[in-house]
Image (cartoon, rainbow, N blue to C red; front, side):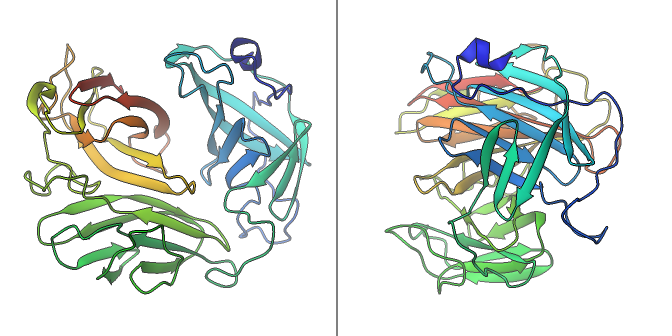
Length: 353
């Protein structure tokens, strides 16, 4: 299947399920304990990663080992997952290979075991994201931590960060690398494992988005200024380091950045449609460029800056985005991800729905 298309080095079958199964945690005697699979896992070579979410959806990602032009994202498969009696099953929902949609075929369930930060499954050893090879105690107990930080003076004074009903302040920056949780100029929150919404603001910039906390780990979220001010206020979620709301119309950007418009062409039928753009720094930490809400649909690709679409101004490079359709926890909620490449002075137009 995927391995034949991308000639991946991980020669194992992926698992799937055709029916509902009990998602029991075989390593825990408490039904209230989080499932041990929840989180993101990597192969030792880094050729594949898989994310298991607490709502029993997930994402499987393969790297294109052939460096195929236009295939920077490799293959991305969305799935629902179930476990029963030590067997793990994936029910594929959608697949994109090099940005093109495919119809995935399901595979039979396979046995799995979780020991600490190590997962044995499908003939491969997987390691939990953030595992340093030894136990750590970020947050204590079953908690984890997240640190919000900036890499330079954004010129807007102190930044207030709110998460899970608590507000903290960033009053300094780290120019030579990301801080650790608890460091002086980081806004650090200690939380139970899960995904949390956050907002942040200073005198001229606003951010919002989500961050995932894992037991015993320090997640890091950099708030970026991206060289621009928040000219559009807070309407539409102008997060991600003060990206100008609307960007430069038509992509006529003469600076060292490019513009992106993410747009919807399908009928939203009253559902909420949100998108978050993000990337990873050299240390592997996620950097969010903010969440936008799409309020309009288009019959043709709009120009950068179009009202009702999600607009970003970014430095050249490869970015990923996650899309949320509907309300989390409801039967019709959907989540998927994809990516795009920003080029200097250009307007990238990507339909996300």
